[in-house]
Structures are given as C-alpha cells and as structure tokens.
Length: 533
Image 1 (cartoon, helix red, strand yellow):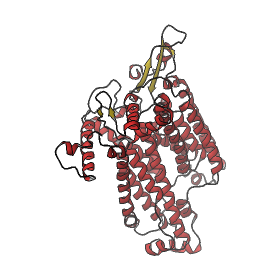
Image 2: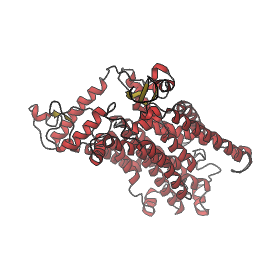
Image 3: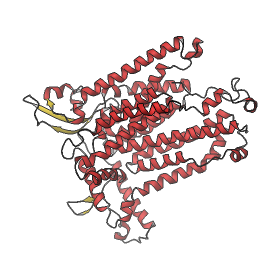
Image 4: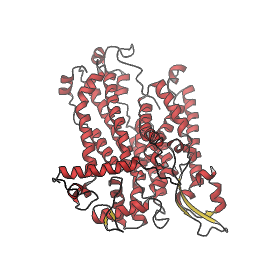
C-alpha cells in the first residue's frame, strides 16, 4: 500500500515550477497524485472479487428461511412491507386504519420487493436483506482496492465483512439497518469515483499545457462536465435517509470531503488559491447535491403522497385548515416528521438488549434476535439462538486499528486515513450525544460505520505490509532487500489475521444462524457471560 500524502507541494524543490514542468513533461509525482488508480490487473481483480462475493452470498442465502416465523423486529418491518405492497402505506390491521410508524418507507419497500417476488414468507421478507448484504461486500472490495491499489487488500476487506457475524445476521433478517449500511457505503464509493474523475480532469489540464490558474481557458479546453458520480452519491444518500434519518449525519462529512478533495486536486497542480478556486467552482454543484438529497428523500414517500389514507396524510384538512394539493401535502408530511422526531428524541423505554455507544465496538451488549430450547441435539438440554454479535477477533480489532489509523493519518497526511476516520465518526459519534439524554439505543445502530471500521483494519494491515518511507530510509528500491522482506512478513501477518477471523467466525456460526446445539455448547460461546445472554 503506497500512501498518497500532501507532503510534496508545488513549489517544493521536487515539484519545481508548474509552468516549466508542463513544457518539459509532467513530473511523476503530479501524475501519481492525479491518476493514482491502476487498472492493469482489472480482469484478475474481478475474478478474485467474484470468489469473495460468492462466499458471502452462500453464507447469507443458504437456510435463509430458518427460523420459521418473524424474529425480533421482523414483526414490524416484514408486516409493514406487506402492507406497503398491498395498500401503498403502512397499515394497522387490528384497528383497520393507517399505522403510525417512525421510520421512512424505503427500507420497507426494499423488503416488500422480496415479498412480491417470493411471497409473504420467511424467504420473501429476508431475501432483500441478503442481497443488500452481499452487494455491500462487493462494493467494499472495490472501494478498498481503489483506495489501497491492491486486489489482495480489497479482497481481504470483503472477506472480513463476509465473515462478520454482525453483518451476516443483519443480512439474514428483515430489518432496516443493512439497507442503511448499503446506501452509505455505495454513496462513499460513488464519491470516491468522483474524486478520481476530478483528478483525471486536472491531469488533462496539465497535459494540455494549460495554466491551472486560468480557470476560463482551462474550462474551454478541458470542459468541467457534469459530476455524475457526485450526483449519484447524493441520490444514494437520499435513499439512505429514506431508510433511516441517521444517514443525515453523513451529509456534512460528504460535503466536507468534496471540498477537501477538490482543494487537494488543485493544490497538486499548483493552483495559487486552491480553497477559493474550489469554492467558486463547486458551490453550485454542492447546492445541487443538497437539492438531490431532498428530492430523493421525498420520492421515497411516493406511496404516502399518492394515497388518501396514509397516517397524517390529511392532517390539515382534518384539523380544519386549508389543504392545497402540493403545499398541503408537504405540510402534512412535515407535521408527520415533527411527531416522529418527538418520538425518537423522547424514546427512553428500557429494553433488555439496549446498549450504549461505548459498548458497541467492545461487543458489550449484543442483541438476541431468536431463542429456542426445542429441537434434537443428542442431549437432555438444547439451545438455538440468533445473536447479533460481531465476530470477536474482528470487532475487538477496531479500536486499536482506529488509534493506529489516526496516528498514521496525522504522520502521513494521508487522505485515505482522514476519509475513513470522518466516515466512522459520522456513523458513531452522534449517538454519544443521545446517550447522555438516556435514549434507548441498540448495537445495530453502528451498522453504517462497519465498512469503514473494516477499512481502518485494512489500512493498518497495508501499512504493515508496505510502510511509508521505508524505501527512502533504506535506500533500496521497492520490491528488493529489506522492503521485499517487510512485505513478505506483513503479508504473513495479514494472512494470519484473516485466518483467525475466519476460525472465530466458524466457531460462532451456529449462533448466527440459529443452529440447534447442546446447551453446554451454546453456553461455551457466551464469552462475556451475562452480557451476551
């Protein structure tokens, strides 16, 4: 893994004068910064990607209809999805009226898609989550490969997610959080592609011999074009918000990364005022991003808008106010959102499996989705459980990996470390604020942060395999002598770590799928005793 830093700036002796270098040829350091992604091994990388994705799919799809019946919050979401399919809105079947629900509908529409395809049964309401989980493994592999320039590290990232019990249980249950994870990760992937597209454009500017500070001439010769990847990322974030509002915490980080990466590209080619230039160029597109997020979110409520009996759909009319066609519908939806927000902020009901954010990465309180003491196991006492528990070897690596990542991010000024840390912060830190208000929370709230926690681990493994500055310190070319030995040792360390995660996952697999076992075998897997029971 070769880190990309901001150490070498235009104006440094290594960079020399941007104008002179454009006449004589583009310096290697500028070309590397602006076109970092190497696609020469793409066919092999896709083959390796396919193998890992196949493993993930098999683990998530085999036996998906077990256990029978609705487990944990499937009671709500699978039922709501069925009613969306039948009526276009969530419905209270007992009272034969519109149901009051506090999460947007897109995740339930995704579940409904599976019910439409396979029927209102266990396979039908769980298949969409399994597909979403498998897709997230695919996306993570490609994100990691693009960031770290390594097919091995990319596949290691996907394999770690495929072998994570937390991710697997969410992928085999009709809950909303796997869809939140998918949309957040996909938005990051699209933003990463936008970063590469921007840098390729600036490389064309330099190759054309243009002055990067002459914005008008550069725009005429190398048109800006529409940042389709960025707009796609905005749509994906809007979809995420349409599953759960907590995705809103990622929006400020999303905008911040757009600005930071645009500034970094301009600084790499010698723009004299990169911040001002980036803000002038991008402010309109950033505004459009905000509009797209809002419009996409509103589109997820289409069923509610098109209905005449959704909850609060006619609130203004029922309250004696005027209810004009479009504005009235938006005002009704706003009132609905106010009521839902009050519910969320006031939720302090005690729950057996609630936990606090500082417990999540330590696996302090996993969530039991299913429990049964029936079935044949060859002993007098049997047990079967589905426990939302991260693979311990993996999850107990997250905090050390974040500490090392923060240190390396500062020491190397590496954009990848900073991006990962920001995305993890958006997924976890807001919940600490709510914890002090005593709000009821669960471990699965950490789901959208998980891919980036895995990227933190992969970053550290990559740093062990190819430490920054090693070649310069030793005076040897990469791939020879000490560097080659270090990479071999690092590869052994990384391979051993992935193997330990796989063995740990295999040991806990029975409690990820509800396999019947002896009570003694089940108890042996409750490593933290009462905290896991």
